[in-house]
Image (cartoon, rainbow, N blue to C red; front, side, top):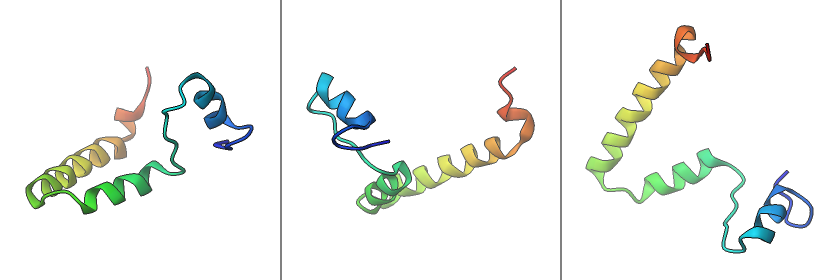
Length: 64
């Protein structure tokens, strides 16, 4: 899917060669969170907990 020669990433890079691809968003988030300051990391952790709590409820994930 993200193939360099014949995947989605190659099609996107044809339009904009400056695009950077990554295999997993969660892995990128984990790498980025290692370099955050402690107060910013605590805020990010709080936001992640709130979003996960909201998404855990079946009523909040409906599209209608």
